[in-house]
Amino acid sequence: MQAPRLLHLLAVIGPLLFAAGCETAREPPPPAPQQPIAVREQNPAERLVAAASAPGPQRASLAFEAARAFADAGDPTGVRAAMELVAAPDMTPADALRRQMWLSRAALIEGDHATALAQLTQADTNVGDLALEVEYHLLRADASAAAGEWFAAAQSRAWVDSLIADYQRRGTNQIDLISALNHLGPQRLRELAVDQPATMRGWIDLVERLRGLRQVESIGPIDLADWRTTNPGHPLLDGILSNAHLRVREEFHPLERVAVLVPESGVYADVGRAVREGVLAAWYLDGPDRPALSIVDTTLAQDHAALYAALAAEQTNLILGPLRKEVLAAIATSAPTSVPVFALNALEADAALPAGWVQFGLPPETEAVALAQRFFADGHRNAVMLAPNNDAGQRTARAFGAELAALGGRLLAVEHYDTEGFDFGQPVRAALAVDASESRRRALQDAIGMRMEFEPRPRGDVDAIVVSAQPRQARLLKPLFEFHYPDAMPVYATSSAYSGVADPPRDADLDGVRFEDLPWIIEPQRFGELSRNRIEALLEHARSQYRRLFALGADGYRLAVAAHRDGDTTLDGLTGQLAINSTGVVMRTPAWAEFRDGLAIPLREDGSIGTSAEALPTTPIVMPAR
Image 1: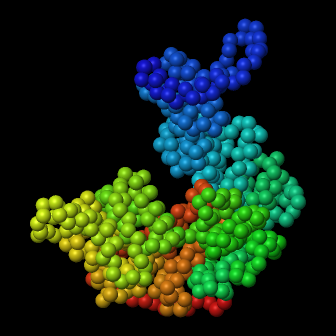
Image 2 (image 1 turned 90 degrees about the vertical axis):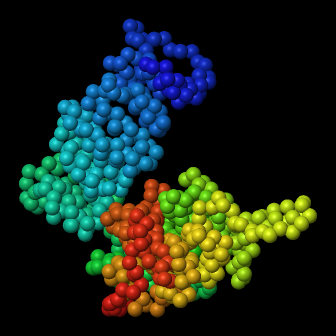
Image 3 (image 1 turned 45 degrees about the vertical axis):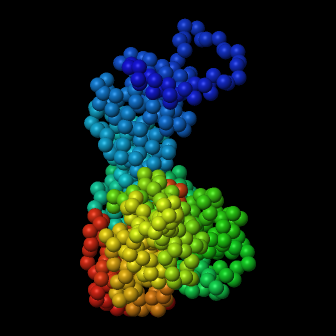
């Protein structure tokens, strides 16, 4: 073992060894006769030291034992440290596979499901060790399930099932296989069954039949005699039927009733109506399996925890909303969690999201983070920012600066302007340090006692300017930037800079500005029956200032139903590319556009200019009456 590797391992395990050494001293038990101290009796850090000190042929075996101990202790860093001891040229093919599997387990401990699956995908399983291959496929099934890829989990378990010799272990695998399929909705199962081999079709058919028997207390082989006739030779073990049926009863709750919690009266009525119309539009297009939908006015509820309890008592399967943050907080802190909630807002950062709940919204922080990522990806590092002097402006500036700093850039200055004003010259001069340049001129003039011909210059360390503004303010700010930087300084903006309505004469002042927005806004011909062109031809509220909230409601319904019904956690949405992460937060990737000739032109993924989406023709549709 080379000295650098030992030093590195000592840095990793030193604190663990110290902690172990600080335990209260106690009388050690007498050693067993003729029994050496086994490695498995050591703590994880001691096992790692033993592995590091072992000769080549033994090192890998001891390192795997250390990794197991660290994994049992929930320590992914220790697992990775142990795997550093297993390296070429000493690795056998089987050791290489074991190494990838332990690295995958480390990622699973951290909740990094994508990395866990990637480690397994990269592995070569052709190592001539059947038992190890079984372990690999079971681990891959676990990783797929953790990532919400339920059918992939079922496929891994089906593939390995016949290789499991132990009856009890095979039965457990079959129950887990049934459970994985049970996470998929009826329509999704029917679609998948079409191209599957006979054995998998049998498993899918079994799940559908068990769901049909979910009201029955217990079942036996006689209850599935016709299934056996339809699926002769299927590997199902009859001994697991009772437990499999119980698992299906516990896990499968068909989506029959959805309650939408929005304000329909009071000061937030227009906001609630926009979200409600988006939900209803998506619901109309959901097909024959769509659930019953009820709209609940949260403004009228005096006790929101009691409202939640009443909905649960009515056998509601899913709650979409609430929309207002304070209502969400009241339900989250005081209500039981028997009915999952897909919130259309977010709790405060320090508040815990109840298990099984999801939160989805369009907060300014989300836009600011995406803005910083695009700014950095475009090659810029140093920014100055203009933002309104209100809560949203403060939050946007903080989030943008934090994300840019995390990426390696710098927010050099932030200036907040009066949203009611018309003259933004002073905050622009301050952000660009023009006033500082003028102050230096005056100081120098006073020092030398004579008047100087001098043109104040803006700061020269800025790569691009970032603006958080409404359309009126953005149209006034952009010409000021051009005055101070005649050589076309890049300008980025939040979605609020675009009204959502093509207005070339007024938006010509914004030419060259890149901004993020919802795909539904930037590309109004997309999304088929839900396209903005079609929806706005039908619904007046979708054409209002709250049009982005219409998209929020539609995507909220679509993603919530897909996740509950089919286990899908991603969506190509009206609001962007959506994905529910492991903490229940919907991550959103927005679309981008640039003003050209006063029109918002979509940007392709590589940043190049697309074609104008504003001039495309519209086609009206007829939606069913409520």
